[in-house]
Image (tube, rainbow, N blue to C red; front, side):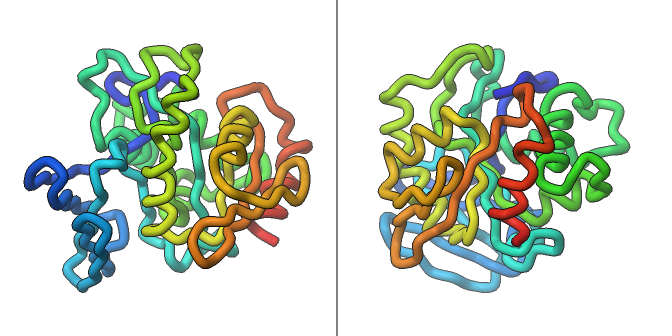
Length: 249
């Protein structure tokens, strides 16, 4: 986890219009899947060309989904980046658009309000883990190619030092399954060892190596792997081959 600028002290979200408790949750976002519309009501799905999609109430903090997610430019596969948890202060800032706001802040390179020491620094380190320290993709090259959200769907606290509880991990599994079923990634890059350990302990999988496993979700197994969290102290030389083997090979 990492501190963020002003209200964006977390990683998650999208604008949402709700039509009532346990009813349809519609959301629109021009930067996310502009040609695809998905409607969800209970367990049913439908697709149109209206440019809308939505989540059930399980997904409290909505994922970012880039424009090129279905056909990435710089990645070999449809890729989900999986962070761990959300924190913010004051707690009123915690809502469904948290991740989207953070990513948009990183994309607004000409804005004087851009947080260059929080989420943007995290983004830079993430790009360097995957593409090398001399990468020139910039935020747009990364975020428009991937989907991104945090596993824990509750507000963990106001500081990254606060750890999620066992109940938070267990209660966030339905949201993870829904995100996977809708986005259908071919690869998942998990950020952080604790995040990885909790994931493989809660999700059926076949572990291939210390850093990689095949997640058994739905009809198509998904290859997943982890690297140390970008907000931590890490060696690019040690983790880059693992990330590149998973995402670029």
